[in-house]
Every structure is written in C-alpha cells, then in structure tokens.
Length: 298
Image (tube, rainbow, N blue to C red; front, side):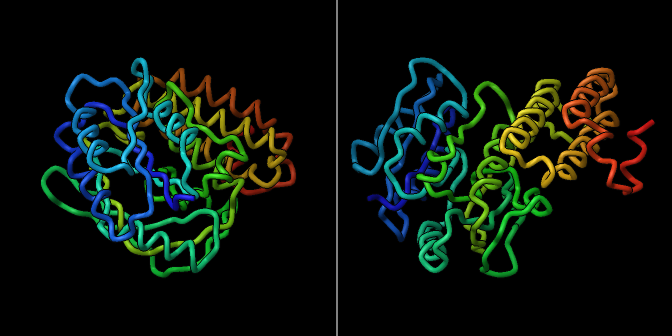
C-alpha cells in the first residue's frame, strides 16, 4: 500500500501551483500519490498539473464535471485515495522537502492515527511567521484541548481508514469547511502525535477574518451553520455531557462577532438563541456555577 495520499484541489492557481507540486515531487520520502482534483477553473492550473502527471506516475488528475468547491474536491480525493495516510496540501501552498520524511518518522515511532505538525505563515512580502511545537510527543484529544489542535487540515495527517470508517467528509458549499472536518476527525480518532517542526508553508491571503471588521456575511453565516452542524454531531455521538462546556464557549465566542459586524446583530442574536435552545440552556447546565456563563440566564 502507498504510504501517503496527498490531496490537492486545483482551481485558478497557475502562478503558485508549480512551487507546490515541485516541493511534493522532490520529497526526500517518495512513497506517495498526489491526487490533483480539477475543479474546473478558468486558467492554466490543470494543464500545469497534467504536465506533472505525464512525467511522474505518482501524480494523478481527478476531474469534476463542473466547479464544486474545495470541500467537494477534497471529498473526491479522499474517496479515490489508496494511501495509508492522508496529507492535505492546498495548491497555492508548499511543503518543506523533508516534510513527508518527518511525518513518516512520527507515524513509525508513535503508531498513532493522526499527526499534528508545525507550519509557517508566509505573506506576499516574504515575511514568515513560524509556528512550531516545543516537543515531539504523544497527543490525546480532549474537549479541553481540541480547539488548541486547530481547525485546519493542512497541518495534520490522518489515517485514511479511520476517516473512511467514521464517514468524515468536508461540508460542501460552506466556507470554513476545515473546522467541521477537523472537529469530527479529532474527536473520534483522539490518539495522535505531535511532530514539532514547521514543515508546511501556508500562503496567507489578505482576506477578512471572523475577528475583523471586514468579515463577509457569507463567512459569518457559514460559521454559525458549521457550529450548529458540530453541535448536531456532538449530540448524535452522545458526547453532549463531555463537550457541553466546549459548546457553550463556542456560543460565547460567536456572540463577540457583534462587535465587528453590527449590521449582522439581529442575525447573530437569532442564531445564538437557536444554538442555546439546541443545547437546552440553562437546564442542561444547572450543575455548573461558573460565573461567566450565568449572564445567559437573563
């Protein structure tokens, strides 16, 4: 079995994709397949990816009939994956040349089903913000630290069979799709390992953030929808008692969006009330007396 299936959606990245694919092709560890998913862009990105596929059998092109978005592209690749582990590399990012070697060593030494590794944030000016961990060490996911593990898939490697066993997919048609996938995967797989080195290079885009004033309405609304879907998953999996503080803290954090998006105040209040009803607040929290939660009772 191939060691790694690298999931790489391809959509309008002709200026960046060669750097991405070159760093994959030239890895010091070479037991992998690259699943480039053609999501029907309008530039030459796919033609460039096809050059690599024609020269190197490890590169494969999976085609969509029409544009479906990054979530659908990743789901298509996961379904087709034959590798033992999944690695997610966006086609405008790149990895260090020894990235797969480091990940493989972490898997071999730990025997765990997911690996969390360091990364670099790289902006268009060439500035690099390094995010490394203190040690190479085991990691057990709990409700208290699941948020610390991060909501991005590109700094994680998951065992393919586990993702397929639990039926974990990316939500199609929504932004912030990584958050739902990561929560479902981490809360179910639980036992992982930290590889401390920064081996993934994430190209920071100059776009609005959930915490800034220039946040888009779509991003905000999808954040609430994703949160509700995560809550439904928690309830479905009978993890409510274990994750109820996590859920309440999520609601508190989301309401802070009012500060940055006053035009969405009514929407935020309405959706927050829906989430509170879903978790049966305050009835399901009567045994908790944490003061910072009490203002919701008014």
